[in-house]
Image 1: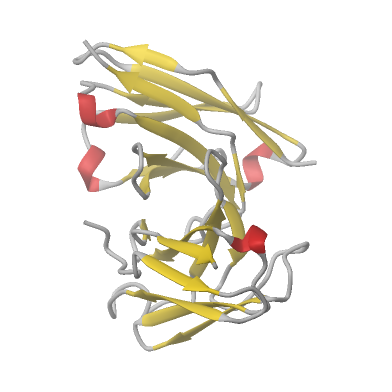
Image 2: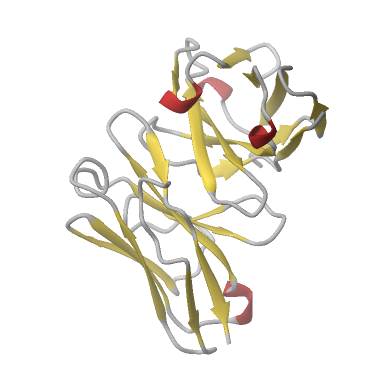
Length: 109
Length: 119
């Protein structure tokens, strides 16, 4: 059982937007602005998409954005494209370790 | 460019140990922490622990305490992850990843190493 809770799946049509939530506790997500998001295509290593809740690494499309409210962080993907179809994982510092969410499968309809 | 290159796939019997390497290049080895994360078939990512190549201090997830050891060789910019007392549910792809702070998630990842535990 993951410490961070994500929906198992989300879907959206090309060009539209989706949001993936990541719910933790006041000991992890709620206590640190240290949430990151990863995209993983089948058979590939994870790729960093968002770090420190809202920051985008160089080279990541500005269609990806992050936010946080209380114990829940969110990843928003706008202008959905076929290549966005992948698994997405949130990750948070817990004060003594790091924890991942269970992952969300994004389907682009 | 930053690269983390891991050793090849392994097949081990239950009760054995496995040692996976992660060789870094393209950056100052001692300036970034190395995490180990695993992914069982069809499952999500699971954080195992972290090592600081500057000094060698480690922190392991409680689940792996006692059978997980992380070491490093600064002369070759390589970190090693050794997991002992292997069970069938340790079958997974094991990834290394680097981060600048120990409180951050990895920003670059190795390609993954499949470890299969089977009798």
